[in-house]
Each structure stands twice: as structure tokens, then as C-alpha cells.
Image (cartoon, rainbow, N blue to C red):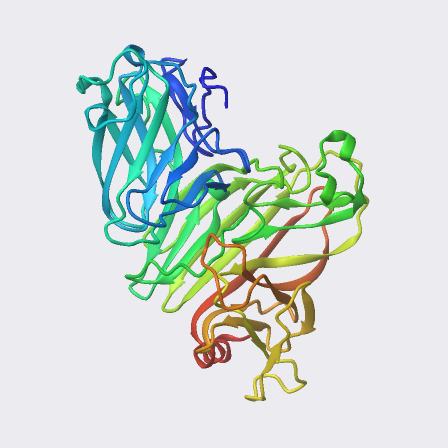
Length: 449
């Protein structure tokens, strides 16, 4: 990123830096909203090299005195950048410290300001009043962010944005972030930074998220297909996804652009999100449609209703029947055993099948309308769609390893074939069941139509 490019940021996809119609940032805004672009930030010591996923800079602490540094040519005028605001999440509590250098002087305690990390596992906005420190003066060439990990040598760190601002009122808390429900058994999260997709499921009171968020094509999200694959590379289609059909996706496109939130509501036990999705293969091209999601918790289960409303004006894609993912579900790498029932006597407690867990994905007739990805102890996540009797699934990467941000992942998707016209309204419902394999099947037996 050009450090003199003072970019405004979308209010719902990332943030809005506006006061009285003018940009309120006084220096660079590092927004991490382009896939693969760390905007000059690198690991200097005891941290893994940062990566960019879903609008976040992500890294892991690997030892003591962990440090991230910016590019070394910022050339900031300290007098017009009195405040630094930082949106950060760390999986462990501790203490952070911002250092700066410039004018021939190096990093030193006398040119630094500390802050206490809050609520491990949650995002917080930290306001650093730089102008109150006598060392904040002249030209600043480089920033360094040190994060003390509170004793956890493998703490995960995610940074949403970093901005130099004119005042601490320049950047409000975002109106919409991770929307959560917690019923004492499960914690469920729908992420407005990921188009309102489900990015978090854990047991209450834990931070053991079982949903994979390695890239924008994962999570638990809506994704639909219409028409025949087309070569649109001349219009910005990503080469390795060409040709491709009409495919709006909830989180964002293969180029790294994020879907937009149009509306959301949170009540005692329901989250509603309305999303303008992106076409997966195209560069920053919204789909001519919108998605709606209603999610609620019931004991060890999340019940979800999804709706697609099309208002397409194109003539590119003729009406053809396509397989629809209802929904697509990606889990962490420790959930790699796939179990289901494929027999011709459903709901009679017949023997379960363990499906091959390799890649590419494979499909089967799931006559009880469910499948589960579980760990070596047969605990994990089940997916049930009463209207789908075919499921595809598999596993990519090293089985038995990896967390929410890592590449290894399990995949399940109930499938139904449907033709989506330019004015189609398409709805479906499904359930995500957390527990042992026996618990998952018992829940399906108690609730199947």
C-alpha cells in the first residue's frame, strides 16, 4: 500500500473513517482487504510470517518478544497523526506495545506506548494516544508492534485494521462484526466481515472453534450455481476459475473482495443477516441477487434458514439445472472421519458407513439425509438437510491436524438439483449438530420428517 494513500473504508465490510464528509484518517490506513497483500507488514521476531485471509492479517506467536514491523519508508508527520487505532484479536491475554523509529533514531522504550490486550479470542479497538508521548515527534519512518502472549507460545493474532488518525473519535466501533448467540451449550458466530457466513461454532465457554476459515471459499455459507460455465477472463475472471457458471458466494470472491452486508438483526435467540454476495470467479463483481440467513440455537444444534432472491438482468446464462450446495460446510482438520448412512432401510439404526476422506470430493446417497465429520474420538459436527438425499464430501490436506485458520479441512454439502432463473426465490433449511456420532444420529432420528 502507498503510505500516502489515505483510503476510506466501507462502513460494513470493514470500517468508515468519515467526519463531516471528509476522510478522518491523518495517515495511512492499513486495511488488509486484499488477499495476499500484507501492506508492508512482516514478522521481525518470534512470529510466523503474516498472511491475509477474509480481511484480516493473521500470524502466530512462536516465541518470546514477538514483533511485527511495517515497511520502513512510511514518512509520517507525527504532528498530524496524534492517534493510532488498532483493531486486534489475540487468543491469549497479555500486553502489547507499539514502537516507532525515525530521524536516524532506532526503536527504543522511550519511543513506545503500551496497551493491555483484552478478552482473549474477541476483537477490540485499541486507542493509542501517541501525541501524549514526548517521543512522538518529527518524521516517523517505521512502526513495530510487539505482542506479549500471556504465557501461550502459540497464541494466534488477527489484525482487522491499523489507522493513524486525527482524534480518537475519528473511527467508531464497527456497526456489525461477529454476531453471536450462546445458549449455554453452543456458541454460534456469523461474521459480517465474511458476508454474514457462519465462521464460528464451539461449545460454550471454550474458544475451540470447529469451523475452517482458511480462505473465502470455506466457512459455512450460501453458494449457488446457474447456467453453463463461461470464459470471462477478458472481463476480470480469475484464470484458474475459468470457465465458470454464475456462482454468487456469501463470503467473497476468489480475488479477495468481500461481500457486503445490507442489513442485520440480533434477537434473544436468532440472528438475521442480508447480504449482497460476490461472483466467485469474477473480480469485485456483485451478484444480481441477495442472500438472507436466519440462524438460531436449540440445545446442541444450530438451525439455519437460507433464502436466495434473484433479480438478474443478464442474458449470459441459459436456464439449466445445476447441483446446489445446501449449504457448503468446512470444518477444522481434526474432524476428518466422515460417517453417514447409505443403506436402503433408513431410520432403522442400520450400520453406518465411513466414507473415504480424500480429495477430490466424492458423493453418495445419504438416505437418512445427514453426514458427520468427527475426530478420532467420534466427536464433531453433523449436517442434516431433510430435503437432500445426496451429499458430497471429503478432506483436503493432512488428516487430523489444523485449526480454523489452517489449510487442512473437511467438507460436507447436502446436494439438490435446481434450476435458478433470473427472478428465482429459492429457500432451504438445515441443521448443524454438535456432539458424538451417536448424539448426532439420535438427534436426526428425533427430528426427521
